[in-house]
Image (cartoon, rainbow over all chains, first blue to last red; front, side, top):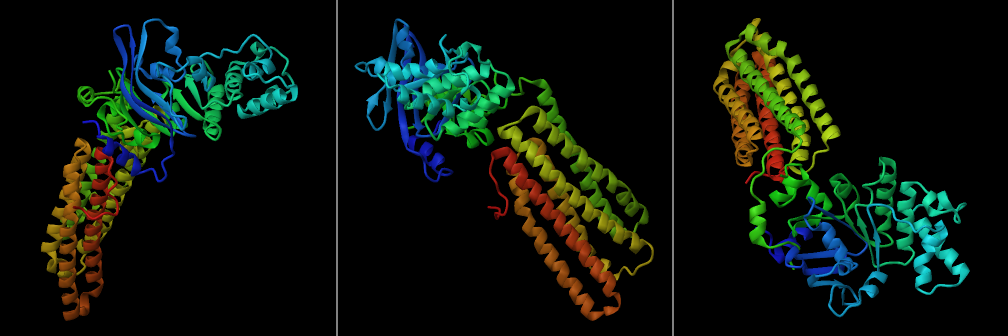
Length: 272
Length: 243
């Protein structure tokens, strides 16, 4: 049987000396597309400054859960949320009925499977979010753009071509530009939805290395089909199946000795 | 707050799903396990044959053990290589990873158990060529019993690996103290003999080494059992007293 609250916490506590505080707390999160329930009672604490990976087979609800954080489901009609995702310490429920999704999205960054830079210059891609937030001062913009590009490990590669079209960059560079664009607005969390599935191994390695270093700047939540990637980059890993969270623990525990047989079956390739 | 879904549905998810989707991985893991078990079988036979050679002062049996020593070494290298390649090519995780790493350690334990058998066989060969048999005769009962205990422990440790049976492995660990007690008793007997008659001091010392070798083989069996517990349950029982 799945662990009681106490058991879950003590299990984690046995190998975490100082558990980082939760910045997001999902409590019985559910989501309905019409009558179909795609997410069922998901409880999870996303720790500040940590990388949390969501793994599971297609249709398990991992992307659905990720997209709750920036209210992307609001774009689809007949969608209903249940439960809460509380942002600490503001005590803001991201999926609360009275909460403006635009306000939520202003505080959340997202990077998608396929790099999606705007058809603008490298500089303007990163400056875009800052301009939306009212930053007009050229020096400030230049400073923040450089900081974001450095944060995304892209500055050295593009510092001499800031005015070139972003679409002229390689796939990996475009993806790092999208990360820089998200970092520029100093989000509370950066969401990655299969960020390397369209990239070659070298570009993938650079993104993974970047994700590992990003934890100093921002909390990361990543959906990946690549279990080795989850093992490499995440501090915590959640295994989801049929819309439910089956197991959530430190990545080292999940990938060496998971508590649930369903988790073991999935990560060892015995699933289905 | 539990960071999980509902218990009822999770119970359904925990239904056994056997075999990997990648059948080549299944095959590689099965081969690794079978080759380790095969190496275990050879080492068990080395132990019992070496002790039989010693008790019977049988040069032919001693030579059998010595001639198979290279085979044990070759198997250690081959199985270790297989485990290494399995890790490199299939990137196992969880129970599969525990199996691959444990097998690497188990082959070392088996090879060392084989080395102990070789030393006993060399002593047996010297006995067969005319060395005095008094000290060995004096502790023959202990040698026989310790050989049965160590062979039994090795056999059950290897069976436990084959079945991923942590209960059987735990029982192997518990039997090590019995072997230690037998060794202590045999040692007392030999010491008494050495004090009464010092003509055979050299052979007495060799006999102590043979007994110690059997006691060490028991330790190797215990170490293998600890690895099996790790494979089957994820518990690390090294350097812990068995319950």
